[in-house]
Image (cartoon, rainbow, N blue to C red; front, side, top):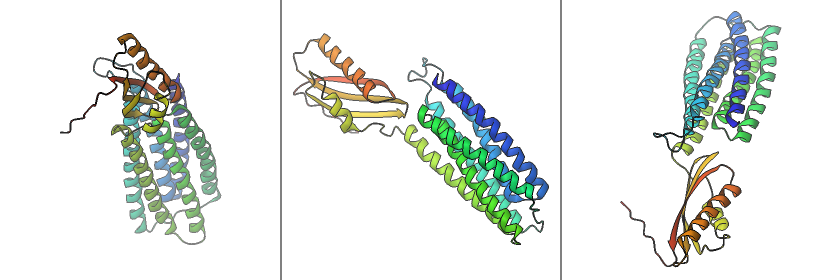
Length: 292
């Protein structure tokens, strides 16, 4: 159900992004506005990132198999990384076009249609960004959150283009390529932000506060201590590994029941916990972790 919702959001955003991109690119080419063209290509790459997202989600939804016993969820994170790479490519192209335009004698033609195209597409992008980010947080989807950042950067760059068109209308033609270069900088910053979040998942950064986990585990009867708490995974797919101390003479059946209770309790307390591995140790046993 979660992935069906993500699919629906991505398909809807894809349609809107392509419509916005065609409007900006078409009028930007006709009016010779490098800023509008750059913004149009930015929107076009928004659409391409949606397609990448749809492919990634299709892979991530696959169940665990022999080669992937932990499932395929990280394909969603890899997809977010792919979107960041697309942004870097967009940034490079837009920056190159802006530099070219600084030495180009062709002046952009600013008309009422230019303003209308930019304002309408900005309204569409604002709605898309708000909706996609809300759904991304609700569904804990790296792809939707990354893509909403992509769309949000499009909104900011559109505002810059609008201001650039106004400056050109007032007699400052260099404002158009300068705005294009500013757009390139915004896109680069967005890409770096997405890559930073992606590394959190791919490098197994902690997902839950160890002190909070320990406090909850210690409320379970029969547990004398809890330590070596480790968490990793995605925000919606968390793996927990911990050790608990119990009475040395505890029967195996009771030990199993305690371990099961730890798992169920943590899953109930922390949203997104997928699996909990509990290591039972007799009280008084000192576990020494070897270092290599």
